[in-house]
Image (tube, rainbow, N blue to C red; front, side):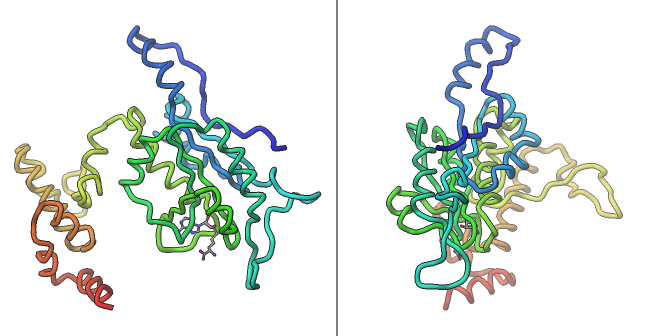
Length: 287
Ligand code: SAH
């Protein structure tokens, strides 16, 4: 029924430099993490995922990407994929039979631990924890909506998890799918050169990351904080921790309280803040 899915990335095996690589390389490729994306716009992929670190890892076969064109499953001469909303209202809704056929095609060969996700503003919020969970899976199937979204029956019947990338409405699920894939793929070992940068960045320990600086040491009259030039690793680590706590406290009282609680500290400490963000957040929470 459908054309062959389009694959991005290379699944062939490269010549390796050392015997150790010869052992590891085929294994890694055969168990490479995969993303299957059901979309009306396959040309949107790999998009930014084809660039830089994620693009290089895609080329190397560390992960793979396949697009499934929803149009191929459309009905009738015009391959219709949508119809007007039951009950009236603006826009169009993606048909359950069309979406089911695409999901079933995507399920073929997608065994093991393989979540199926519909990108949706109504979904559970995407998070670093979810990216870590998905990176542990064998792969993921992502359904990109368009128009007013997808008929609810097919989401329920196929046990599809709805995931949102934020409290705003995009025109389609493609950008959301790329955000989800990007955040997940960079956690796969060997995608980022430096595993430590993943371990230390924002959200990894429940705090936002400390501010970063680089050369020149003086720029438009602004200096880099002296401590960072001191060479005292212990003091630098302490400064960074204090900055991470300060930023989180100021900008994300929700994360700050959760972090305090995880440390066994009194979440009420978070209430002492006089920062405008905190006051605003408190106001919202009282409603
Ligand atoms: N009428 C829907 C919005 C449809 S937007 C509603 O109010 O809930 C069209 C498509 O864009 C959706 O089907 C979804 O796949 C995608 N989309 C829009 N905003 C999104 C978000 N915040 N996160 C994930 N996907 C989103």
